[in-house]
Length: 185
Figure 1 (cartoon, rainbow, N blue to C red):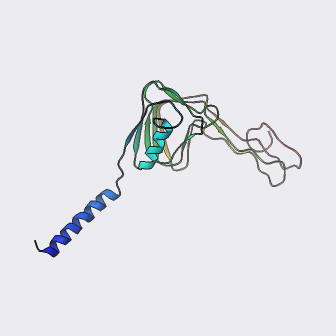
Figure 2 (figure 1 turned 60 degrees about the vertical axis):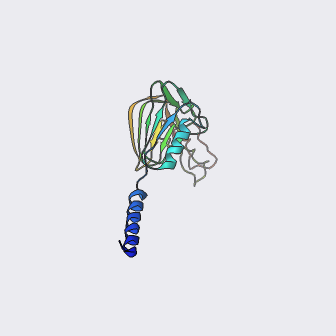
Figure 3 (figure 1 turned 180 degrees about the horizontal axis):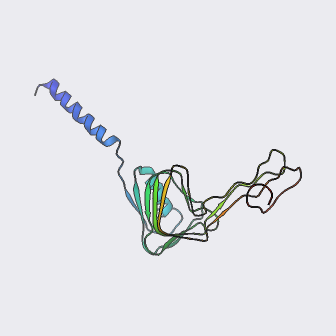
């Protein structure tokens, strides 16, 4: 083969190789091996690792780890992932955090108990005319943002709460406490 044609042949082959691999992210599998909130082997680290790879990944939680108690905040997911809970496992929001916030992607959670989550809306204004009502608390266990797709398969929800923020009122020097989000009440 003449030198000029050989060069074109290699250029064509390299172009096909790059085009074929550029758009395809490889799905990976991550295994949760402990019930720590963070660090190697934790669910939080597995989610971070899955987010870094792109593509639809799988996270398997080893059987009988017990309760994964979140102590540093909820778990945020922005990419497609399947979380297999295994046997005898739960994720606890520690009565302080919503366990799962799904920002984007297609997420499936299976064989897991999600418990003691808390989503609390922001408090309303301080009574001035420009102040608003309290914000809604939504999704005590799982919140799926618009455009995200979430499937819960054989998931048990226990003791999760969504609480609206304290109300505000348009009356100077009057404050509302307690409340269930917005207005008087």
